[in-house]
Length: 268
Image (cartoon, rainbow, N blue to C red; front, side, top):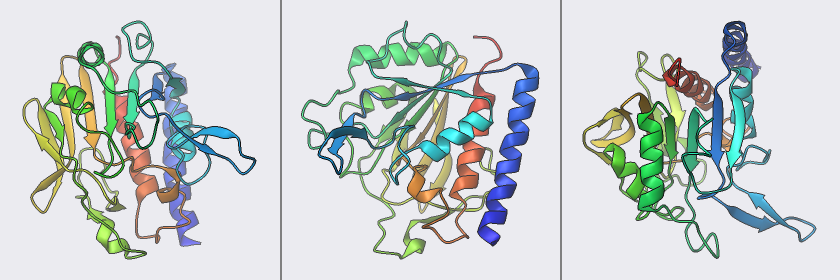
């Protein structure tokens, strides 16, 4: 009952934000990368299906719940199946890149290139909001992807912090300060098996733990970059079914979404 109450409060805040957005006529667009993260698996019928960190996926590894938060805030959702270009990023305000494939996850992974990194850099500089959600050392590609993140002073170390054994939830716990600039009032969250960050200007740490950087933000031109070394807000850890109620991942997802929307320049 208490868990439902908490989610109801968070949902009400999100809906209130949606009403305000509609009143102002603002409809930014968030685009989720389906190019660098392009995993497939067999379903029960033996068909090959797209999966892992997609808007459509309602199972544990999907972003369907996070997608609903974007919807409630009046942010239109989109996907990008191709490598980024100036043309196909033109109408995107927020570009989310998650868990780039390794050669173990895809027979022909699409690796980041210097040319694509430059395109994305220029898009951010012009006012784009870039979200980089990496993964830990066993589950993502780093050498090529860092070609992009390092444009903004962010290097994913490719390690694996907060390793959790079974249901020892505390091994994946972080306590965000109550006045956090992105997650005010959220408190306790859960992130397991993440890559830490090494940063330099223009990036700055927005959350550290035990001497290592967990989250970073960079401002370049008119644009903004947010980075953390885990996909974090997939359904398994925001749906309230698995984690104890003391972990506020859903509220954190709502807070980050609202913050991302605020970073979009009024005119691009």
